Image (cartoon, rainbow, N blue to C red; front, side, top):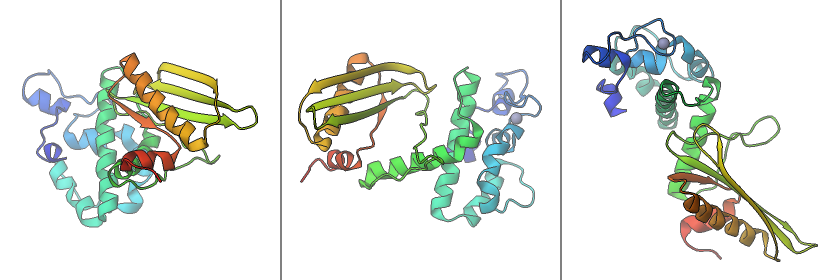
Amino acid sequence: MWRTCLNWIPTMSNLFIRKILVDDICPSCGKWGESTIHALWDCKNLKAARSSWLPDKVAFKGLYFCFLNFIIYPVSSLNSEEFELFCTILWRVWCNRNAGLHGEQTLDTTDMVEWAHNFLVEYKSSRLGTPLSHHTNENGHVKWFPPCPGFFKINCDAAIDTTKLRVGIGIFIRDSNGFVMASSSQVFDASFSAQVAEAMAILMAIVFSNDCGLYPCVLKSDAEVVVNWIKKGSHP
Ligand SMILES: [Zn+2]
């Protein structure tokens, strides 16, 4: 954010000014020069991201001539949590812009706000050891979001069959484009508790990811109790 306020990010306009590019046309809309404020806010192709949350929260009135001038409005009109979300959305917009520029899969702009919300929940949870609270869709299911470019995302889960004394463990590892890079499923005879089975799934997922050379990565498990034990380094 600091670099953005100082206009240090490599937008087309900044590269054009430094004579690295022959024009500064926005790679997304192809119509206007890509200044910092255009890349992060003004581009017409960001309308869905803007309209899905921000108009109700931010009184963007009057003229702004640059990003630093523009950021005065959210700084003065948002509370700290809203401003965190606002900055995270802008960060994801920039990541999305770079992913598109390099031919990688991008996040739909209508999902930006939900992605940013879930990212902040996971980030704060990892720092504070608090339970996760994700946005869910109309079916009550948590939506899968890709990790940041350059990261892999592990999803793992365990199931137990108490009648046949069997445990099943499933692992998926995807890249930031959502492509499955590796997967594993195992069923074996055991009579673990659900929490022990989930802990084993997490351990096996980390070992599997490391064996496949798929890192750095983030791991997602729905076993909140077990995840909190791991974060605290202890269990009852
Ligand atoms: Zn544009």
